[in-house]
Length: 122
Image (tube, rainbow, N blue to C red; front, side, top):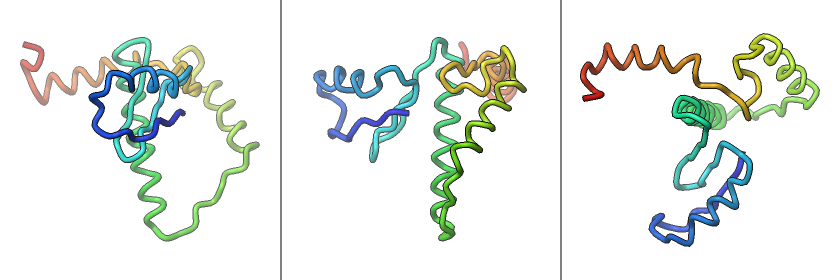
């Protein structure tokens, strides 16, 4: 996860190099007070990344607005959860955010779009 500070309306061509620099080798970029940006090897990957980042931000805001102090999860629990998820999702990309593969949900999302908005691709 990377961050890029808000510089105003993104019309300055010079900002491109700063966006690249701040993104670095990450696939997820938060632009505070501005929005979210994700990258992926394919359109399904990038879509899955932006969907997950958006939902994560929504959940975080809801948790913070509850007024209940947020408990920091111990690193050992995070590490164990990642290891277990990788084992459960072997060869599907799940569990490793760097290689998260959108190819599994993408066909289902396209079928859903076909039902909700027939002819969208015309």
